Amino acid sequence: MRVLAIDPGYGRLGLAVVEKNKGKEKLIYSECFQTHSDDNFHMRLGLIGVRVRELIEKYNPDVFAIEDLFFSKNTKTALKVSESRGVVIFQAVDAGLSIYEYTPNQIKVAVTGYGKANKNDVYVMVKKLIDLGEGKKIDDEIDAIAIGLTFFASYKSAYT
Image 1 (tube, rainbow, N blue to C red):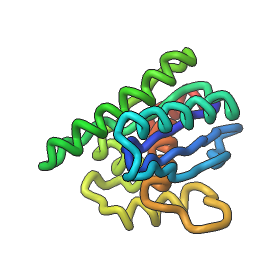
Image 2 (cartoon, rainbow, N blue to C red):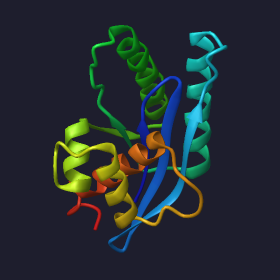
Image 3 (tube, rainbow, N blue to C red):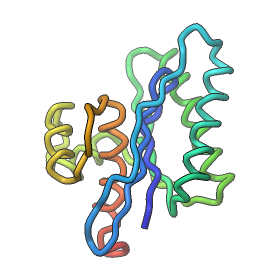
């Protein structure tokens, strides 16, 4: 079973492909996809859609998992992230993938066992749960991997 997991954003988008085979999770691919602030917002959304479609075509995931929108004090940013979520969810729907959404709290509980865990706690546990390979991972990328792990923790009995 293979999941494409996404930590949504429009400046930085965490992307991860996580697979579970014979009870073991494996990181197939991850990146922090960045758009340029010099580009207009519509162009940035288009680039995000293209990148997600490329990953769907290349890695052929069985399902799609994404972080649910967390509303912050900055409404303008939240609205733009919401639009980015719409673009990536459209790509998943267009590819016929089932979509699973998780709140930040659900992700923290699944990965660390504690709903108020901080970014470092999540990073430390993700490193313990799955081989991250070579190179430093950016926060958004770690969050996407954590979302992939959350999918498998949430559906443990179905995909063991």
